[in-house]
Image 1 (cartoon, rainbow over the protein chains, first blue to last red):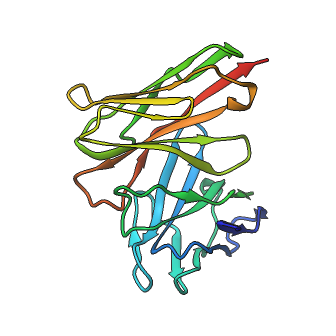
Image 2 (cartoon, each protein chain N blue to C red; image 1 turned 135 degrees about the horizontal axis):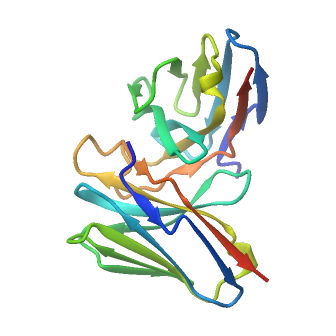
Length: 115
Length: 113
C-alpha cells in the first residue's frame, strides 16, 4: 500500500529552467493538494483539486501550474524556476471533497533547490 | 496566512515525561487536526477534533478544544524517543471553503532517552 508517491525526491535547477513534480495516490481519493514548506513558514497551499477535472488556486499559486491528469495523478509544474521557489514540496490527498472530517495523507516530499 | 500558532515553538523533555503543545487560532472552525512530521518525511495525521467536541483520546494522545478561547492542546503521555518530531496543528475554517486546511508553523519536540 504505497499511499501518496512523489517523484523526484530531490532536484536542483538553474534559474529559468522548468520542471514537473509528479504525484500519484492509490487510495481512490477525490481531492489532491500541493503544499510548499519553508523554514519558519509552516505549510502553504499552492493549488488543490477537489475532484478529477477541477483545479483551484491556494494561498501561493504564482509561478506554478497544475494538472489533474486523472483521479490518481496531480502534477505541479514550474515553468521558469526562481530561487524563491527553493522549498520542500508536498503532495497530499484526502477522501472527501474538502478537509471536513477527512485527514490529509502526505507524500514524503520533493526537495527542490533553484540556483 | 497562518491560522494556527503552536506554542511553545520547541520543547525538550526526558523519556517518560508528558509533553503538552498548544495551538491558538483566529477564526471559527469546522475542525482542528494535529499532524506529526518526522525529519525528512511527510506529515502524518494524528487526530481530528470537531468543533462540537471538547476532548478526544487516541492511545497516548489527548486533544482538547476550547472554541470560546480558540485554542487546542495536544498532550502526549509517557513520551518515547520515537515521539521526537515536529507537530503541527491545522484548522479547517468555516469561511473560505472546506478545501483550505490551514497549517501552523509547527513545534519541534525532542524526547531525550
